[in-house]
Length: 270
Image (cartoon, rainbow, N blue to C red; front, side):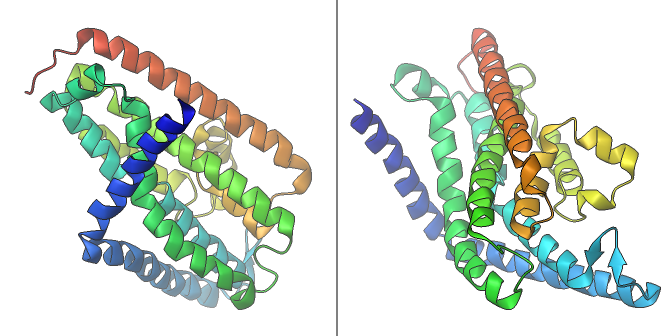
C-alpha cells in the first residue's frame, strides 16, 4: 500500500517536470531573475557602503551581506508556491476539485507534489551553484559540515511551512471565490518581512520582535543564518522546535479550513 502511494505521487512530480520543461524559456528566465536581482542589490549596497564610508552595517560587512542576500534570493525561489496556489484556487472556483473528492488522491498532497516538482528544477540549478559557494566565498558560508546539514534541514522545514501557509490562504476561496489579491499581498509582505531583500537584523528592534512572533522568520532568515554561521549553534534546537511547531500549526489550520470549506463547496464553476 505504501509503495503504491509513493509511486502515485512520484508520477505527479514526474508529470510536473515534463510540463515545466515544455516551457524551457520560463525556467531560464526564472533562474536569470535571481542573478539579475543580485546585480541590482550589489550596485545599491555597494553605493551605500561607499557613500557612507563604513565597513560594517548592523554586523554585516559588504561581502557578508552579498552572500546573505544571494542565498536569501535562492531560498526565496525554492519555496515559492505562486503557480501552484493559483492552480489550486482555479480548481475550487471551476469545480475541478470534484475529481479529488471522488478519487483516492489528496488535494493537499497532490499540490504539494506539484509544488516540489515545479521548484525541483531550480533545486538542481541552485545546488550546483551552492557547490561553488565555499570556493568563491571561503569562510562566509558552509564553514562546517554541521552547517550544511542544518541548512538542508531548515530549508526542508521552510519549504513545507511555506506551502502550508499558501494552502491555508487558498482554502479561503471556498467562501470568497477569488483570493488572488490576498496571495499578492502576502507575497509582497513575505519578500520584505522574511529577509529575502533586507536581512531581518537590519529592521528596527520593534519590527523584529513582531516578525519573530510569526512564521516568517523561519521561511528565509533561519536557513540562511545557519548557512552563514550568524546563528549560534546553541540556539539551533530552540529555533528548530519553534519552526516544527509552526509547521504542525499551519498543517492543522489548513486541514480545519479545508474540512469546513468542503461543507459549503457547491461543486460547479463560477
